[in-house]
Image (cartoon, rainbow, N blue to C red; front, top):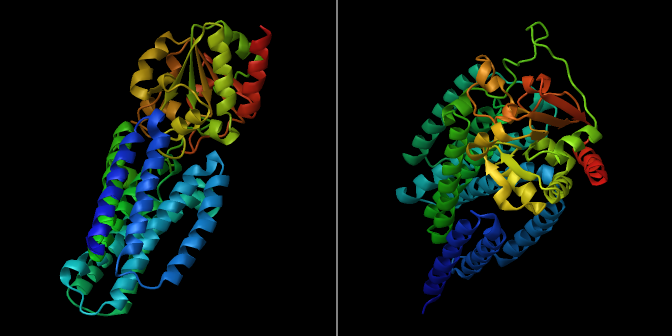
Length: 461
């Protein structure tokens, strides 16, 4: 068996493990093992690549691996759960940037590139550059950097984006037609990068989960295109898996918000327009504050309690405290369920990850379509920092930027208790009329501390 045959065989084993691992991460019980299986597949693919006869400078490879490991491992181990979305955006962007650089190197070093290789090189450069710069903007928004908090009007930027897309396509066609000019390739990367920035700038925080998923799919597709140019089977398969799964996830999340993907990127949702908070709109904004003792009594004598987690729970790292409270309530015969909105938090599956970390039984996690029918028989809905996904303005206020988005029907519960630090609006930047409802009471303070106080009161009953 030749070395080439060994490399091909290892690639088959590697991407076979990718597929198995991806299937296993569909469920919480097998997700950890699925990650391990996929990691083994990646290790095998890496070894196969290093065995390839076309590998050049081993010293540079070793230096790159050392630098990447020194940066990646501590970053991943030390990152807070609240910052996971930002890290996902950064790591995704690094992947796209790597593909763009590979495309540049291939274009510079190869003379008389055949068309079947040149086209994927150009495509990889475009998508990789868009993904890198767009992911950096997404990171800035998730990190709430001062410049990223500004509102960028979608209308003018849409025209700029169309113009940039035209420039990118024109440069790509010129290069593919045979213009062997490195300057043109640099201009292509710059134009695509600017397009990535201006495409993400006007998108509000409420849409960041969809944006992250889309950019992840872009990175996968750019990697697949690079694999075609490099004749690397593992890169093609892995890139297509990421591209396909990311595209499906993007579509599912957009459907869950009752919006098209085009509307997500060009509609300006969550950018702050049409905020529902005018002081002269006639709405009674009386806030009814409560205490930990009162909440404990409500919860202890309820038959069904539905916990609605949001980003506030992630910020306070209150998931374990919530799980402890739920366990205590269950000992008293109270049924406890968790309502999971598809876009709660800052990335796909954010709440699922947090609650799984706290060993919450998966059977208690109910998706929006399953739990909405249960709120009518719910005695207490305990909302922990979930602003936008419980906002009735999505159904009642046509000029609201979230109008039409499906929400959790917490207002149908017998009582609603909201845990928040203050009356500040959510990531979409709009007020929530639910907080002023007759059945709603507010328990102000850090969510973890508040849940701990409620638990202490429950234990004394």
